[in-house]
Length: 126
Image (cartoon, rainbow, N blue to C red; front, side, top):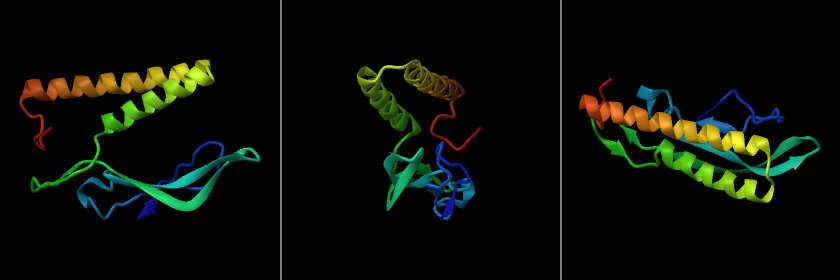
């Protein structure tokens, strides 16, 4: 497990880690561990020692599949979360986050439609 050298603004503490041993062919793009947040204090994010792991679906080069969530599922949950938070604490920034996440989903859909059209959806082909 190694850390991702990016922090959550305005914290300087590393809080996201990748399991690059699970899928060496993809450099660790399928399993992420996050330190649990305790919110903000004194101008920065504070983290607990406990963690959560999110595993994304992994199709190995030999065709075997390790179950996990799809990126789109995670983004749909984020959209739902931010819509609900925006209902309580509306802001232009919240609206921009929701719009950007919807743009991500639109790009995912375009990619999938293209892969279906080319007959490579579900295959490990470019």
